[in-house]
Length: 167
Image 1: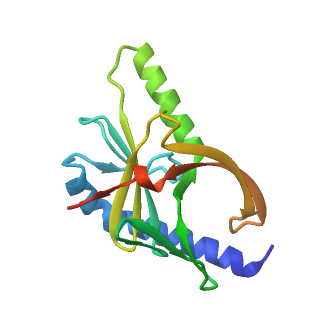
Image 2: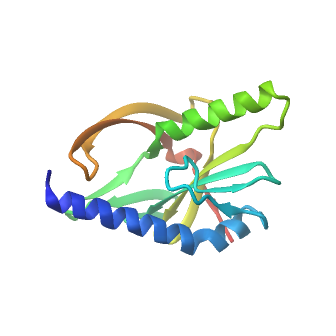
């Protein structure tokens, strides 16, 4: 394993956890959730939840993504600049949302709204999870995610379906 990648994985993970803490008050305001809670389970599919409003939120922090005139610009660690057509998250989160709401429907309970929030260079953008395949596509990505070469399923949300959230 490349020790540089492992170091970056650990740094990225820690940075994400810090961003969750810093972003918590903003997310409460953005989603008007006074009872929003930060899930203490490090392996939870979604970072935040509000049981009263039936909302679950996953935060993805992307300091290397800037949005200029509605266009998502990405700069790699090596300095290469790109324009993004999609932002992604891990597919198990989508499967969890689907199964969770399927179970709730079967129990005659209200379904929950699931949101993926990307914090791009301090600004918040969100997508409400849905099963309209016009807005996203899934794929396998194979690369070094910080723990050696791995393949995983991701959901790519088309940027035109991602909305800015203002505090």
